[in-house]
Length: 235
View: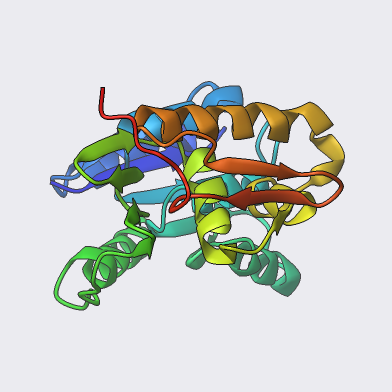
């Protein structure tokens, strides 16, 4: 059974969509606390998202960008905005489709079925799992796992993004600005200490694999990955 997450602040529209979609044997959840959209997303792990643009606190474009940092599931915008630029913005911010309000529920269902087929069904592209390998270190990007020899650690999305950048740049330096841009959309709202905290967490993940000194700080430039030069502690 596929799961659908509805992010819509009009309770009548959200309830109408939930009731209608459930008739077609889908599992449906509705976000009610709009400051915790990503918490709901991570807990529920939907196969598809229906997303309004006008939402409390942050708009749908913002939440779509956050979703895209962690998932490639289909996102269909549903909005009363009818301008061409609104549809362009929806697509450019990671959306897959756009439905204008008022809508016919059968149109919504047709688009849901179409996108689910493309993402998971008969039209889905059967791609190999993405992974990066450097000096015996393997990063599984979809699983958010890092493997070295016989040990495996689970990563957060930010940790995986940082390690991906370090591995892609290896043995060169990954710049601080590049790392911030990869992980956070708007650097203006990121405290300088935030990256330091995440780098510390990444170092701990390497230490859990038995790799000491894996991330070198290059003063004034950024960070560089060390793998092959380190002694592995098997104790």
